[in-house]
Amino acid sequence: MSERHVVISADTHCGAALHDYKPYLEKKYHEDFDEWAESVQAAERRTAEVFKDAERSPLNVGVDGDPEVDGDRNWSSERRLREQEADGVVAAVLFPNTQPPFAPAAASQFEAPPYSDDMVRRWAGLQAHNRWLLDFVSEAPERRAGIAQIFLGNVEASVAEIEWAAENGLRGGILVPGAPPDSPFEPLYSASYRPIWAAAEACDMPLNHHSGGATPNFGSHFPASLAMFMLEVSWWSQRGLWHLMFSGVFERHPDLQWVNTETGTAWVPDTLEKLDSFYERMKYSTYGSEAIFGGVAVAQMSLRPSEYWQRQCHVGASFLRPTETEVVRQIGLENVMWGSDYPHVEGSHPHTDEHLRLTFGQMTEDEATMLLTTNAASLYKFDVEKLRPLAEQFCPTKAHVAGGIAYSEIPERGKGCPGMAPQNQTQEVAA
Image (cartoon, rainbow, N blue to C red):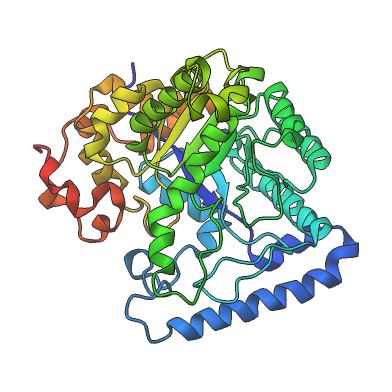
């Protein structure tokens, strides 16, 4: 048995540089792409102007004094491998991070981009990202599980894209977009998406739903807009879970796997308890609004929501907090995966070592191994034995992680990561 963890991050982000997407588009889109790229750069200049004098600007909060936040960490394979190795991580699941071609640009940093009715070009842009991603994964195939994007505006093409992604080894599965009320798309519980769920199950492709990808537009002119975003961003992604449960998706597709990433863990026990309660009242009460309004939906469900959860659902627990240790045990150790959120500024890089010791120092060695290695390896098909030689070079020993760390030893820069935020100080682990 190896003395070192094989550390796999279930949450990292990547994407091409703006103009590097162009070769992945059909030539008929190239002229349009040039015009779109200029509009994106103009929006970036507006953002830079807004923040140029701001003390806590996203333009000057980079890692270790680096003035850029994500920058070429999104697309530089060499830099990502070098930084992740130095941080003790040897494999990663890849969510998108940069703007794909023809995605509408926000008017400023403070508002969500508008929805576009240009469905044909939007889909071409997402496919360009997927083909760039395939090349990016090929530079370190054993170490990267790429997540392909689909488009709710074109179900038939999305099914074909799922099949293409599976055939070409993008084993991270698919990213399920959000459909908030102000979007032009039907909600995720619509029957129109049934071919997507069927294709994902048939191709053994997990469904991934990431925090931030399902929010409505909160508006840019309200002083509380960004605060509302922060307060509600996780909930908008969490709701996809019960949308699929109560529309029978998990019932019809028992092998389909669902992942909520970067939405925390503390919400799961209370949510499952509430969903179970609604399910029981909808299904078995003779009178009352629950049975009247929900009876038709639950009639097709043979399991309680908590049972579907245990069978088919997972949490990508980015920057897991020490205070969440008991919650993880409660909801099921086999259903939780750790993530670093690289290269985002709130992620654990470059202080993942301290973060792992702070959180996993409170768990047993077997528990830490499940969350850091085996759960993600099983779901996303990483070959742990092929990763082990890299782990022997770069990953921390199990004894080192289990030894914990005193909160006073956490660097100030590291406290910007939620997993090492000051509220964890009371959870100090003896060094």
